Length: 467
Image 1 (cartoon, rainbow, N blue to C red):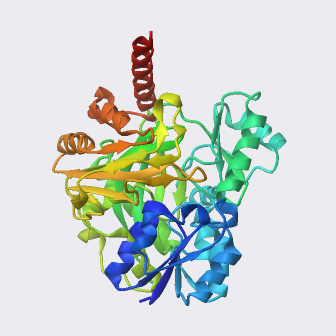
Image 2 (cartoon, rainbow, N blue to C red; image 1 turned 120 degrees about the vertical axis):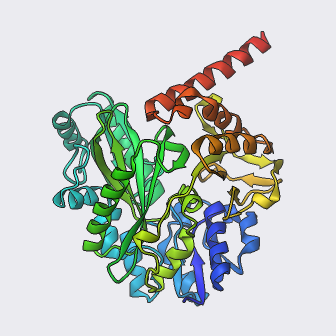
Image 3 (spheres, helix red, strand yellow; image 1 turned 135 degrees about the vertical axis):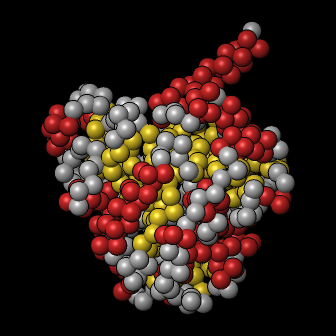
């Protein structure tokens, strides 16, 4: 096992990794930018190191400075969290060259599966059909326009190097594509250090399903069931749940076994997620693989009782998976609500600033055993910086049934007291109460309509109050 790990991320995920390191008896070193110098998560790390100014290109994406910090602090391993460098094959290669363990897949797996365009080709060659789209990365706008004609509008431009909704644009006609291509490319370069884009047909009325996997260095790969992530806005997930109400036990068993066999064949090591699009016809298309920890990993932990971050570290250290597929059982139902500092009534405009009050029952904080858990680095007085995403934290609940989990989430949201910045607590209550969500048979467009209804109702109420 490692003696010391450098954590090159921020906020709630950095704190989550710090907790896993404590559990394993590992010294944690938290890397931070100048913009995060007062972040509460730093207080829980054993050591800390500043890696540069606020802009991510000069800090969390600065490979030279990060590797220098790992050497200076005598770390054996580097945990990237999610986003930033978590799926960067070049960085993983540089880590290996300098004898640091990258806590994630091998550089070869990252090139195959972390790169979204390459992953589509890899899975297609092995018989897992993806959404119709481009063959590899699009070199120019002109190539994108030609490809869109072949694929058929509407199309979706996607960053090849990342996720989280960054570097994604829907185009419904040729007039929209050039500007969308430019915007998505710039956003991808800023977020991931890679401007590469590929294209998929945009499937109307689809559902977003994803399978969680773990693999060791000895060829064993298991899955921990699936998550439903169809409640989204602007390609950003809002609510996730496990298991999916749209996947049968037979589908879970058959598709899970197929995924594990494919990943074992390519020697996949660590945690990862296979993302699928379920068309209204019931077809499941491969979209991409996230070769890292997902924001929504806690719902899987809640229904399986397995600490995914702990296993990430154990697998990176060369341990064998002591878990077998027959050991994995999904118990009850879990729901996660992403709590963001943004204004739903202003098209989810980010709202940096001071969180004057952030209060909830403290026993919920990183309570991995549930039934209510809050993963957050935020405390009253915290200032949300304008340079990064606006997440304040995640509320995760567990119930014996889906109905019980929905009720528990609504009750828990009512016990949050957040002041100082606009936030999404009331939106989550509205979504959880909605008939579409409660039915379990919702699609991403349906939930977008529910969010539009929330905005319309609250905006009209405000207008009436002012008149």
